Length: 529
Ligand code: HEM
Image (cartoon, rainbow, N blue to C red):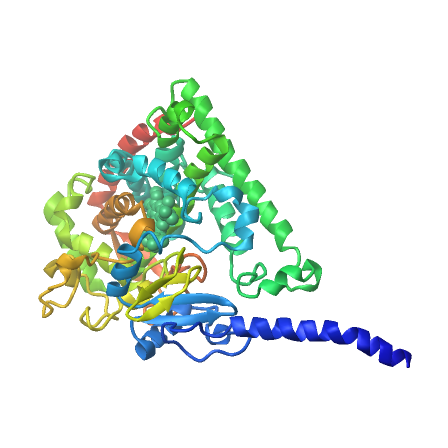
């Protein structure tokens, strides 16, 4: 009897639970009129089909099956992948008012609450203000003003490699970090020794990347019911505490850098850097110190690792394809001779080195799926419906390897960019160029397109031109050209622990590098304590 009453009492609860599960399983089904995609499973949607490792390759398979748009369900979350540049143009670029937000993860609310990080912020008034202030540093000619710093830091990189060639990866990372440290915070990142500014930044960035990794925190957007599950019974237990640790470290670092910039300004030092410019305008502007520190911090986060990783791909390509490096060396020697290194004024006269840079960005984009966008309203495209709140992923990998656009897309062949800026097959007399194709999609697209593209390209051109002028690139073991072994996973994709030796091309260049370093070091001292 007692058991019966007990069961009766439980029945409504069980029914409610069943109903909730039923409701939830519906949410993982494809919405009406959704872009085509693989079959879904209840609860999971397509989650079981998407590998954590190199999802871009799976998305490229889907593109072959389903065409320009792939509609996926990640649990209850909608995700539409854009596989062609035309789809990116039509949606991300031409319907920017709908396609420019960002998905938010619970971990963002802990580490960068209140939209402090403009790269991850949702589309709205605060993001617009942040972007406007960033463009005062990164836009058009503003960004060309920092060329002397990029020039000097890239010279230091060459000198550092000359002195300790086996540490070339560290020196490349240091240089791209130091360019941003000097131009944004007016401070020098002279070494990459542990405890120094640059290595501290890369350590915090690594912890941040780990905190946002796909298995580091509960996937609440995918499975909203996880919000009701106590943290300690989940595999992510402790994630909030870890995320708070990252927040504390980031805040301490960025605010610390801002305070140092302010103190240096009071002594008349570092007056030309971006933060100095912002501090001067702060009284009439909307940002407080915390917002300002994060505006500077995000430039380090978004600009250092991406550019340095692209440079690692460049070194890999130079070692793997000797006929390419030979042509690049012939070009820099023709322009600069053997009596001086290339400098900031030469970069526009080096079309082949520029073509190498474009090809590196196309061949192995460091962000093969860019940063996801999110829709803020329902949209219709080619009779399909893209609901509001859908994550929209630019499949940069697929677009960069589109066989109908690039001849032999898997081949590393800079000469494709000598024929035209798009690198398209020359047989494709390119009719659509005037209809808004970007030369490359490795910097994203639309209103969220990377604002640092010109800054990055200026910087990379100086680093790349000097590298090929100074060194030969010798493989010392297998190079990961046709394999993903030896490449990193996560926020940026790059080859690590490269089996490459950088060897001075001839002894005559040593003195030129040493003299150039003395000059660069003198210039960079203005950023020291
Ligand atoms: C090779 C170097 C770089 C690559 C490949 C790269 C790529 C990207 C990509 C794919 C995005 C997302 C675009 C989108 O959502 O459509 C992005 C955003 C961003 N990048 Fe870069 N980037 C590079 C260098 C830089 C540099 C040097 C800076 C600044 C100094 C920078 C600052 C930013 C910022 C602030 C955002 C966020 C924009 C927003 O959400 O409004 N990037 N970048």
